[in-house]
Image (cartoon, rainbow, N blue to C red; front, top):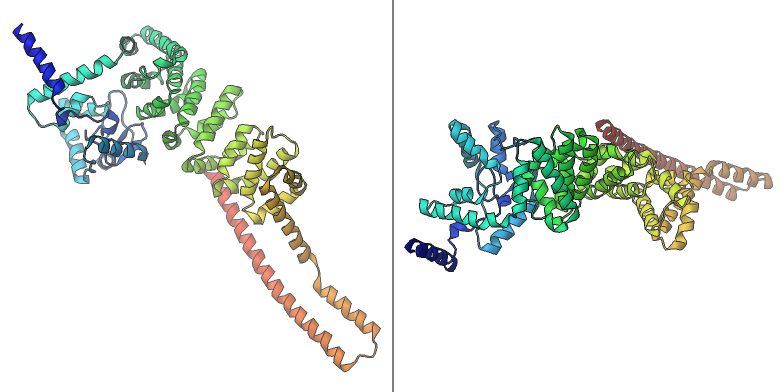
Length: 517
């Protein structure tokens, strides 16, 4: 009975007293897996993890890659994770914690050298750092107190986290982790079914450990396991709160590999998963960096409507990111999109028209004629789509030296006149632009020298006896007109050279873009 009273006293004491500062644990996503501390300058690496920048740089300088529990970290691409950085700072302000300071390069190198120089047992423990950091490990890193406090924190971690895992999740996790293919397949089929039918299960079943196991199952050599695991990720990603969590768990690169090299049905599900993850703004840059754009472009030509739809919608949302727009142009997506008149393709082109590279590529690929034909044939099924086509043409018209000519060849003047009554202000502006070009061409085609010569011969025939005073005046005018003509010729020559240089630059840039694609 005495021991039982003591136990209740400890529980009562712990619940009533203020929490020990060392037990205030930040979320695992805020902790660098290598340094074990809050990240000041987090970066996203190719394998999907977020780490401290200087720790990543130290690993690259020392040519050292820590081993994870399932796969190695990949440092081939590094991008700043501004979203997680702002979230960490907000968490610190909310809980009264000092903002983290970026470790110096020398300190980061010491941490990495410690991982490299330890004994085999110590190395195996250190490499566990690439796992999601649990509470006990974090407390041991942050706390320098006695062993009794450490053991207490471990107990608190177990008591606070374990009850949050439903029994169903525990059973699924154990089967997914099994070495028996039958158990894995059974768990995946059940997980796929329940996450599809019951929306409430998607958040609790999207736990860190289940996502960790799915990383290997997504690239399994067994078709049933690969297909079902990717389908599970599609269902889990339907919840907005899970989208960023899936990417941060390192599942993006396996999904891209499944989309490239997986079984056919798994590829289709992977396209859908990428589309779902692309809806989150924080994921857009990472998806482009980790190589999802080339396979998505290929799936635009899929024979299956659903796959084409998912790929098109994924590219549409990814093209809102500036870096992705440049990548898509270099990959030659403009020619693929102009190959058919799908509404989704038009929307992607509208985003590409926001960058200069996209405008140049579209002008070279015949997009002006493409959009005028859509407007002429009434293929835009709504006023919204008509407005999109007009907006794209208006963006292309900023390249006035080429757009005017291309629009005239496509019969754009008549089409734009028909749109002026529909409240399209941009159509009216483009029409003025084309007509200004026509007036300029008419002025340039007029032969002023022949006109002056003809007027001079007529005046001489009417008055065979030239008078001294009137005779000098036409001569002066002719001389002045010829001087003006020479000046105008020089100006036209300089202008023409400038136009040619501009066109050559644009052509060189376009050829460079396509050669890189």
